[in-house]
Amino acid sequence: MAKILILTCWDDDFDLETVRGTPETAYLLHYLDKQGISQSVVFPSKRNDFPPNFVPVRVKLLPSGRGIRFVSTPINYFFLNFAMLRKVRSLKEKYHLVYSLCSSTSFAAWKISKEQGIPYAQKFSGLIFFGKYGKFERWLQDFHTSLTIKLRPDLTFVVDDGSGGGRILIDSGLSEKKVVTLPNPVPEKVFLKKRNSSPVIGWVGRFNRLKGVNFLPDIIVDVLEMMPDVKFRIVGFGPYRSLLEKKLRKFRQNVTIEEGGTYFETLKIYGEIDLFISTNVYANYTLPVLEALAHGTPVVAFSVPGTGRLIKDGINGYVVSPFNTGMFARKIVEALRRIDEMVVPAREAVNGLPRWHNRMALEITMLKRLME
Image (cartoon, rainbow, N blue to C red; front, side, top):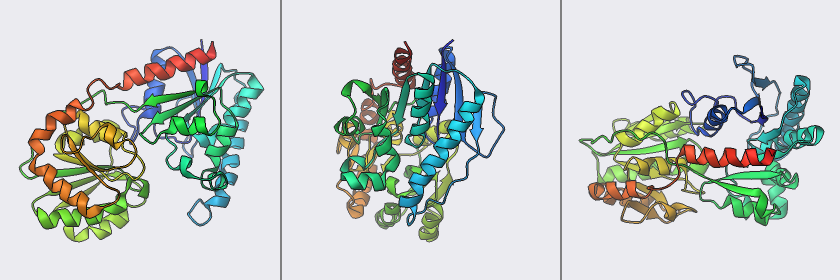
């Protein structure tokens, strides 16, 4: 039986029924099981309530705040990777492939592949601004991505979020034959669409600046000045939630800010809102935009990479020049006035796009081919 060693950075995304946020790893493990491929999953965690093939690693890392991350990130990278190496060596298992699911675990994956004489596959969820940095800035801003590229994996996956990660990897020196772009998929489950008596606008994501959460207060205030009966439903998790709640405290009758639930609980929200807004600052071929459109929910978004592939201005939503919050608010109001005619084009925008089972078939086929 084929056996894969999986190295990852997270300890809370293994089960499809409980995972919050992106179900990337949960789907991978689910479909590997269906294919009869055995796995050992190694990851940093303080918990120890995992099944036997899930192997937590205890590692103490330095703080990584904005002021010191240029120093602490490289140090933490090696702390984590050497801790993983020690743990894997202690298992005394032989594998057919080592698969690193984040660039922060790439050195351990590369080293294990050399020690065991097995292939090494690497996944990037996205490269965001990496392609815009100069050579020196890349090392400072994104140390583990730079080093991972230098390690030359036998196969590199990059998730297509619209930011052009595949081309960035090839331009950075990886062989085009060894770079595989994985499509962001349409959800397997689509929930029934609900009609609301008063318009409800939704936002789903991590509360951080990459998702543009800092633009939300200005957008919300401007919309409520034009349409006082509108409701906003903001769902997610992350460090900026408390700041968002503070800025929107006096609008509590119109704005709810919720902790994100499981992946499938969050999917239901797209059917319960009338309009989805994406304030993402780096790309918009993302899971939330795909998921909203799949539910027939039009989208208003900033014009960042990947936006035009899904959102057709004035047809299934609106595209706004970055980062004009006043224009964004006006387009929200315009979309709400035309919402009924945008529902069908929203669904049609994702017709024929791959679902999770298509996506996983591609990923696992490529992994199996690497082990041949």
